[in-house]
Length: 246
Image (cartoon, rainbow, N blue to C red; front, side, top):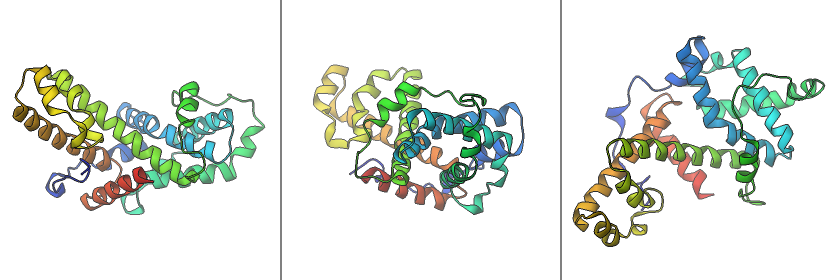
């Protein structure tokens, strides 16, 4: 069983912070709003890059498109059109990119490459290295976007959990148990890890249970940032599982 399936109901835990990242980024120009927008850009730039590459764009054009798209997102205040009742942010973002490519990109190609502002820091070499590992023939551009969204989100959750555990002096424990967060409980060799950490096997299993629970909490928290309700978090969790299974 995947840790994503071993869950508890989040309905009583859905806080007023949901949707706040998108709304702050769209409604004002404060430092907090700009930080929120920067976070969104860093989260979504590679899924959008992978989508464009699968559409047949060159690495250079895909990089320029992502940069210019995020620049327009900021300059034209497109995020003001986002509302919780209109659907999920990731869907809004992909539809907006498609519209941008269809209606704006040909005009902008006449301009000097790189003439636009840099909104998000893109590691071009890393992006292409990551893209080489995408399934070659099996997934459409839209499905590539969904899968990279899912994997990027899980990476964020894992990084947050790693930082939490390190701050609590439990970095070694996290390293021993992290495979069980993404690969299932059977991937954890409890006896070997317990002996190395100086714990009983039972104590290590209890720690693993707590770590999985916190992992699920952080996952739901990340999902809640760009949906409107607890029910939507459940739907996004199912979408994430589907994207990872393709």
